[in-house]
Length: 241
Image (cartoon, rainbow, N blue to C red):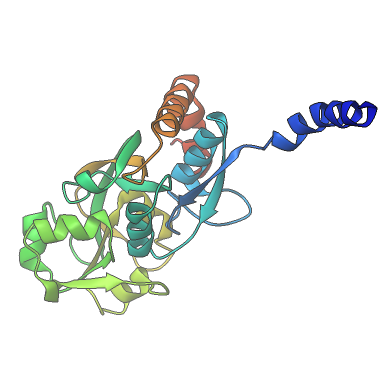
């Protein structure tokens, strides 16, 4: 009897310790598209840092995953409780994700060595071949605007769009304003089109996503917006003029 009591006392001490677990891990897919998202020792870019901080403040541990963008979206859709950032909210994507938190709007533009265009329609008529990220919102925008398959050069891992433009392999590169400005180097003068196709950038989750996770991350991001964290993170990568 004494032995049973000792065992019971030991269990009462040990069980709370053994049942404790740290913050729940949440996989977070993000592309390598600086300054919006990147994989490095000094941060994860604007939206990457925002998503990681929002998850941490919500009580979760972000496990950052790098994969080709089209594959990352597919895995997020087909899984459960996986997050992805930055995902533009397009009509084509609307029904396939849980839209957790709106980070900020983002414009696109054509980057070229030629005279800049003022509209998607002008670009469609003028450009023979446009480089665009495979599986990106930019690709969806161009296809929706009537660009033919043979007008699109789908960028894959290892492709360097700036060099493609410089060497005349493509007429223009269609990407986000921030990425285009960030990556254009000290070569020939940059010509950027008018700002086009604004879309909101989101932290998104699998369609099957824990409502508690969704609410906690959404609320954390909105608190970050109010306390100035979003602005400070953005200015770390793109200093205010």
